[in-house]
Picture 1 (cartoon, rainbow, N blue to C red):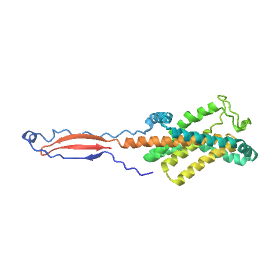
Picture 2 (picture 1 turned 90 degrees about the vertical axis):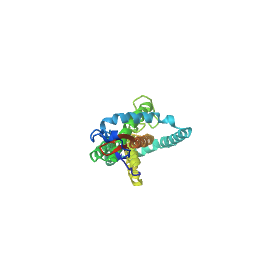
Picture 3 (picture 1 turned 180 degrees about the vertical axis):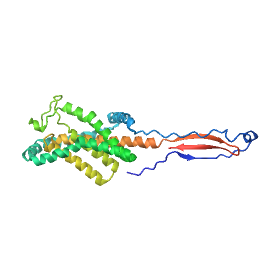
Picture 4 (picture 1 turned 180 degrees about the horizontal axis):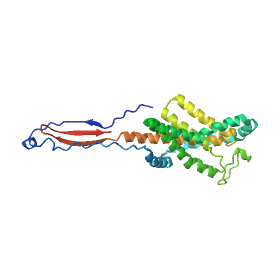
Length: 289
């Protein structure tokens, strides 16, 4: 990530020489108006403004496909078919393998790992936000904001509706990998834990922009998906679907919010204030951006 340079309230005082006139020469020194105070910009990402940001992010994600071109839809379709096709072909064999090799110790380990895709990811996002706020570090705070926004959007607009529409039974139900019954209450497709884990991984990766951070983030997110299969909560295609949703939403939220931040920092305000004194005539030009 390229370092950003911020200029706040840069005052450029320009004394404009003027020809003295008898009328101005008689003006008292304290008759000139004092420069207007420059008010600090409100913080667009302060906690009370986060609901508004969530609404903007959600609207952007919902309407974003309208801007896609035919090539974008083609790539999405081919990727979805390839990913889910491979997953469906391997769903049953992998589930049988996990069932045959089940061990209490592995189940306990998987139970701990999958927490990263549940309450653990929420705690991490909240902790990063609070840490950034306490340290007055906007970049760190932005990671927590983007992760929180992306988690809410991914779950409410894609993962939960797809679960209801697909109605797929979990592997532990014993009804097979091909059992889909819309609106039946099945919760297998896609994996919500995997979605959340990949949201966090994609947001951290996009902000850090370092290969080792990307590797660690996505590696941990992948372990969450494996843990869900180990505990027979999801098939492979469920995990792949959740990973795709989490990555897509996470990266798009970061891109959109970063554009909002750049736009806010790029706002330029100019104020002009005349200055009149006993021995001089001039003006102050103040540029804030």
